[in-house]
Amino acid sequence: MSPADRTSVCGPRCSWRAALHRYLTRRLGGLRAIHTLETAPVLRTVKGAGPLAPAAAPRPSPRAARR
Image 1 (tube, rainbow, N blue to C red):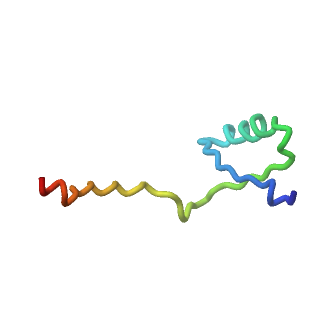
Image 2 (image 1 turned 90 degrees about the vertical axis):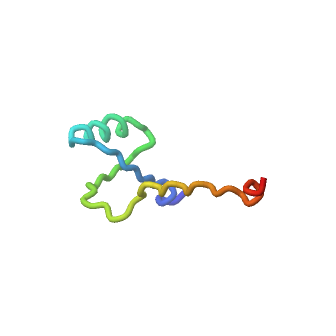
């Protein structure tokens, strides 16, 4: 198995640095399967998922209009 096969990315949202530190050291640090860990701040988000456009109202079928 190559290192690329074992790479995971996660994006925890922590409102303050102490919460992030606690998450990394206690929650993830306590897992035996994790041997190394890297962190980096997100300074700016360029692209991302946005809200879905509302679905168009269904049109009545031509057969229903004839009845």
